[in-house]
Length: 126
View 1 (cartoon, rainbow, N blue to C red):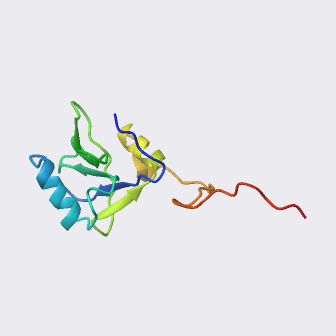
View 2: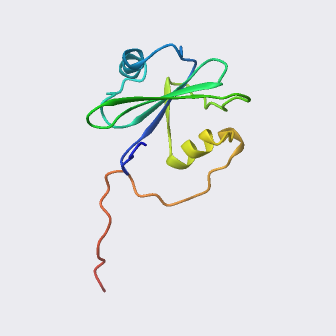
């Protein structure tokens, strides 16, 4: 399915989105509401008001993808933020898809190299 690279970011559009929107409508929302470039290879997540439907917009370098999910029962625990978008880690994305309420989880201190930072290949001895 989606071959996500290490530098792929995951953005959630807070608030409700009209699920009738297709490629062009979601592309426009990413540009206008989220103020991002929809062709940058990041994931953009949208949900409806009832939180039982979700769409993901993704550009793989040659084509635009819209992936849709409709829950038969239950609701997504959609994150909220003051601004129109927020960024999720890969782990938070997996929890969201798995039906876990991110507000009920607790982040622990954890080392994570910044995106784009080069790993230290060798350390100089003393």
